[in-house]
Structure formats: C-alpha cells, structure tokens
Image (cartoon, rainbow, N blue to C red):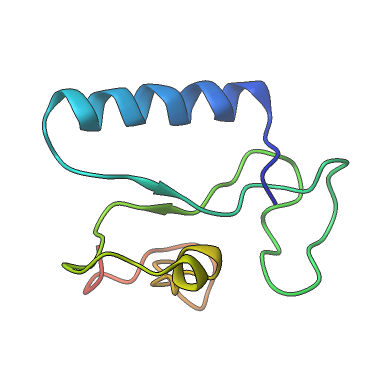
Length: 90
C-alpha cells in the first residue's frame, strides 16, 4: 500500500513541501501501490503501476483517531465513466 515509483515519491515530497511553505495545513498520503505492483485485495484498479496515490488535502476539523488514519474515507473525485472528475467535488 505504501510503495510508489520514484517519480511519484518525489512528487509527494514536492507537494508536501509546497503545502507546508504556504501554510495550507496537513496533507495525508493514503494508498499508493503494492511492493511488486498489481492489484489490491479490493478497489484501486488504477493503483497497479506505482504512479497513483490517494491524497487528502481537506482534513476534518477534529484530529483523526489511529483507526481513522489507517482507513480514511475518501471522496471519489473520478466520475463513473473513469475519464472525468465530479464537478461538484472538484
């Protein structure tokens, strides 16, 4: 769940630094990919090459518990056609 292509890791580091430098708060990095690529047990059809990551930019007002951090509930921004984003969430 926490393995990614070196380019993805560098992107996450740059994004985190930019968010921190702009005082925008906390970024939570969720699932990336499996150590040898391939499918997760459930979901994440696109997370097979090490180039996809779940990024949470809007965290709740209250601090998350340990169990919430392990299984955060994401908003699915990708439309059902798999090609567009949901405008009301973007």
